Image (cartoon, rainbow, N blue to C red; front, side, top):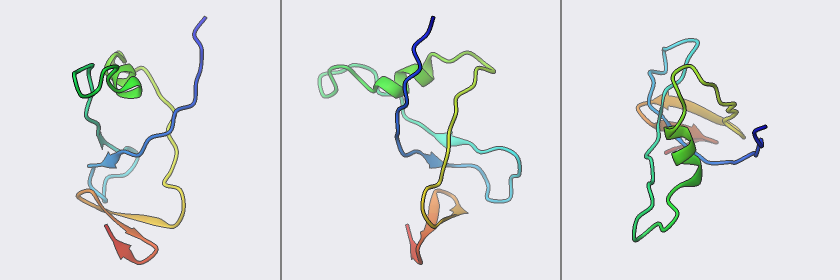
Length: 79
């Protein structure tokens, strides 16, 4: 029996703003290292997913418009 745990992180979408029905994200996998003794708990879990396994995502939260190429309009501010 696997334990389900909610974890929240922000990731950068890299898919085209014109792409419909899917979204791609840039996620760096943090393996254990001197700087990060345990590594990234969530990114290591994502790295172990098999093809076609699923995760649940949601967002964006708040008033946010994805402009493409990793840029957002967040309440009138381009980031």
